[in-house]
Amino acid sequence: MNVTIVDYKSGNISSVINSFKEVAKDKVNIEVTSDLNKIKSSDKIVLPGQGSFKSCVEALNKIKGLKDTLNEIAISNKKPLLGICVGLQMFADVGYEESETKGLGWISGKVTKIDNQNGKFKLPHIGWNQINIVKDSKIFQNIENNSHMYFVHSYEFIPKDKSVILATTDYSSNIVCSVEKENIFGTQFHPEKSDKSGLKIIDNFINL
Amino acid sequence: MLKNRIIPCLDVKNGRIVKGINFVDLKDAGDPVEQAKIYSDGGADEICFLDITASNENRDTIYDVVKKTSKKCFVPLTVGGGVRSVEDINKLLNCGADKVSINTAAVENPKVVIDSSKKFGSQCIVVAIDAKKNGEKWEVFTHGGRNNSSIDALKYAKQMEDSGAGELLVTSMDKDGTKSGYDIELMKKITSNVNIPVIASGGVGTLDHLFEGINSGASAVLAASIFHYGTYSINEVKEYLASKDIPVRI
Image (tube, rainbow over all chains, first blue to last red; front, side, top):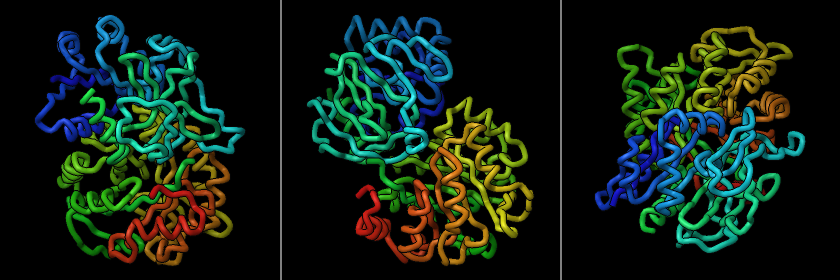
């Protein structure tokens, strides 16, 4: 089996690569590429994302044909795809970081700044927070409710259809921190940096 | 609920661990990769490396340490020391660092902070502030505490937030290595003045010092020697803080 981590120059993905390789060992081949043919022939896709919503969308659009290829894989072919952090946020129709930017539109909704209640909550939301699992999912198999995950973000995804929400985390409000829609999965937190629980989620995704 | 982070810091020189006392007099003690793994297995919320390699020809040793560590530790790794440019940051991130802390370069050329936070995102840019009290105010020191920039630390902290820093790592030079506790007054002033997380550093000797650090408004507490010399384990620290109703990840 091939799992491809999409390298679209969206910032630092070495931790994502290291964690997937650690979990995959020799059983699964982990590719890191922006090559469209390799992405197309892959069994599963990981879409990381660091920096701003706008910079990630722009980086994605810079690689000719990448957006169409991702649409084909995720929407037409329905191959499992995991978006991490801004990777998840890009599922939205629109994001408002820096300026209004169109997202991939896979899961209807918007990405807006976390309400810090007039400075009561520091931003970015950095550190370990517990996740409240609201819906069963294969990617949360053997993950206990209230497990700690590592977060770094200032913006949150607000999906229109609340039934896609798998988990939330409490930071000024209940922030959506994981979603699932058919074959599309996303985590706002960083499983690659969330120690054993995070690696388990990666393992669950690889074994879908 | 977001937990307060406990961050063990390892001072690394030429690829080996050392621990400074008041920024001088270094003692040697071991392999940073192995130690980082022990910390992360022991429940460290993040790992911090401070590279104090002086000579340029040995600068590459830190890249090797970061590469090896990031393949073994799956908690965030912050690396600082000698970071001069956007290219240095890029190199450390490519080796597997999750955040890079910038000290002297941020004072001399704040544009490094602006440019790097734009390029890589604020989430991976930590500005390290070494501050020393002078009368009623605190001044920012550079070059590992050797040079006084005379810049007001409180104003500088705000400026760095505006420039795109995602976090501030504030070290009291008066307290560092003394085991007499964080400079609480400094931490309180900075944490109440900025809206980004602050990591308190410099002076931890007891469990109570860590408690005081978090009570001063810091989102995370960093310590080196208490962990390095085994005075306390990460778990002991967390159990203690939990008993004082401080939210920690256990």
